[in-house]
Length: 207
Image 1: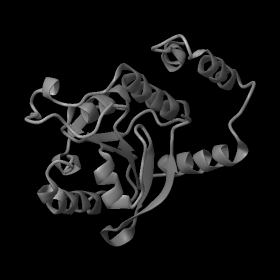
Image 2: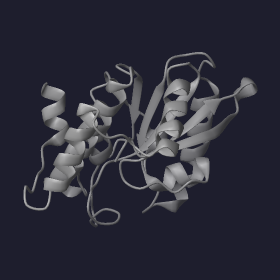
Image 3: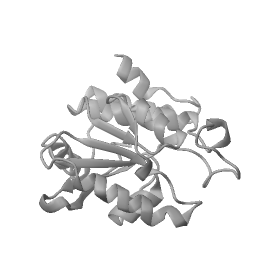
Image 4: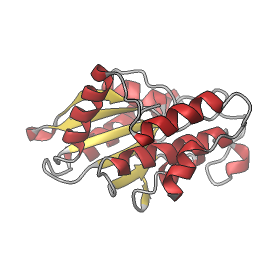
């Protein structure tokens, strides 16, 4: 019951009534997602639970672009952070995954606070910082170093292991997968023999 309450709570009640009713109906089983979207998500969930996959998630809603001048990784107050709706979005992603049997995962995150907060709010297990997931938006000179380290990380993972969740930034997801993702959306990668990987689908986690 707690998870359902988190799923439907609105930050700004005015204007949220339609979303609340739609969510309640979905949970009650009185309406369903469009068939093609449901089938696509079902296929991705089957992959996620079958081993050997990596779910890259862009951090939840954090209004703005980039970070303020002089921001520091060790001080969240100097960074662009999740909005309250972003925190709710991150919780809903976790609820969506757990409702489909994905109760735990190996979770890694960029060291940016908006990513760490998103990763923790998923409630899928302990979160490990992975500098290879850090943004290079403000520092493009770090791009190749970060991407090389991330590809090395992916190549070292077992091809039949449990789901790995990587919470990161749009620039990182685009560079690795060639896909654009909105805040709080994800791209699923299949790990291949020989150390390779390939994108196999996208999800908005029902949002």
